[in-house]
Length: 219
Image (cartoon, rainbow, N blue to C red; front, side, top):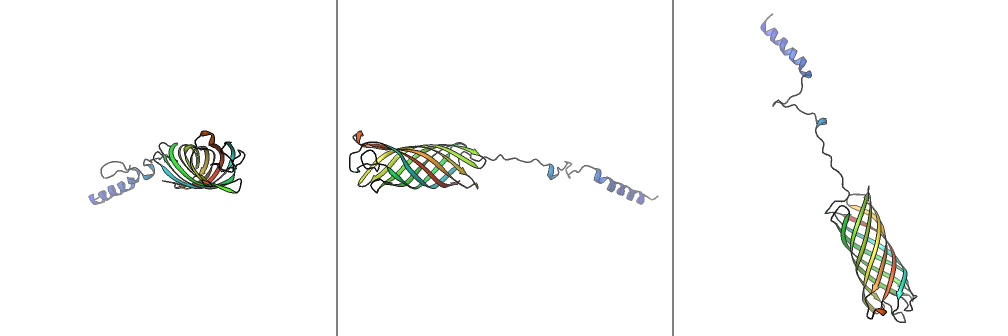
């Protein structure tokens, strides 16, 4: 048998055994199939430190109680008939707000609202509350549950009287984040309004229940 024939036999044997040999690169390092390559798993965080949001919504409110005295003939900065028994008959407006998250739960922001309430005597009480709001937000799936406190200044006007007041509020909300950038929902709140008046016997305190619906833009 010629040497040429034996050489071709060796080549054929090597070709037949080649599928059984481990796969090696030209450098002698075994190649890892793509299905076996390491996979990086990124944990999804619904809220991260540094996240921010802008919010806008409409608000409706109704007076729960009023306390204090302020003279007669409807001269109340809280929009009443002046005898201690008047009230805001209901109203509403809209609000704009901003929040910055320092942790995945805690944020600090501010809000300004523009509201108008009809009063006894068919008059109108105008209010522009400006508040600073620390908020703690729970995240459950796509749902966001913000719990917030707010304190600030209330710029108010009734008839010919314009006077600053104080505002404090506590609120709880529920939002659904349907995309990474947008969420929609609402908030219920208790709001306490107070006049800044001298003497103190001329001031009033008003408690309001409010509800608002709005959207938030996350960035």
